[in-house]
Length: 431
Ligand code: AMP
Image (cartoon, rainbow, N blue to C red; front, side, top):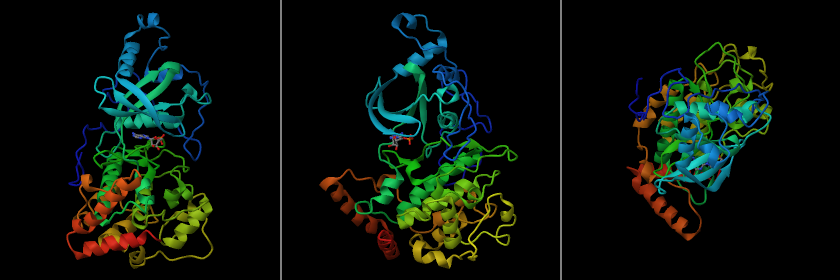
């Protein structure tokens, strides 16, 4: 596997296109993703939804109901019990569509914290598990990279609930930092560091033939050391087979590319790259760049702010089954049009942004192309992860830290231009 100089080496290499490779998981059988049938990726399985589904997915028999039964565990059940016993579940951290997330720790070493994602059993799904949960398990087992959340273990608990043990990421997510304009200040070097981590994560997914399909700031969680990790693989899927039709109804609307809004059923990594571009824009202006309330409005915003997709700039676009654009055609804006709003990241940064937002997915920069872009080598350098701004916990202490950070921002920058960039970014917050 070729490794860009910007790419931190993965901790484990993924055997390409081999979703069922052996892992350190104790379970014999492997889960497989079910196709999604609706926009939220909440595909509608058609099975019986009985509670034993989880066990079947994991290759387990029935969970033991008593200590007496435990004495008769078969080897796989025993492995599940051993795995479960390694962790102690604590307070609830949050709730997602198909899971509750709890803080946990290792029984052997309570200082080792984990997040335990307990998948809700949903009777309407085959095996009782939402397809999103199956996908998350499948892809997280395959992908090991410093910028992708790590799956540490999987076990089934009583009532056949499936539990994913994930690395604990205590510093919130990028959305929290972007939105907290009063207390969290950041500059071009910080954006470059976050974008570098995101680009590396996306490159690694694509290099392993996985599309994430829900990249957005609140799926970018932050580790204690400041490392950003791509999370929530509930909508992910493999794209090894270019002939396969896929659902167009993925990716949160504001981050969804025009080809999906026009109903494309064949697509590739370019869909994630558009989302990366939207995250980039949002980091700079500290607000979602194109925040449509409906799909029609989303298309209208793309046409107005980026340009109207036409046969001239995107051959074949009018044949996409849901192609429809406002009657007034807006020519594709050039780089200069972006400088006023996004110039804080410098001309190279603007160039990268524009390339991620190419209307025609074939002309859009690839994840590898992003990593090879000149922006990473231009000033300012990306901030070291330990120096990146963090979410504030509230109160005086937080304010103090932010003030320190504010000084640091200017001092960190290598020259006066850096200070100017920082000021522009602060100014951008008001927009
Ligand atoms: P999710 O179902 O993945 O959207 O998770 C729901 C919520 O749980 C998130 O919004 C986070 O607040 C929290 N959460 C999820 N995963 C983790 C993690 N690995 N570490 C810390 N908090 C998490």
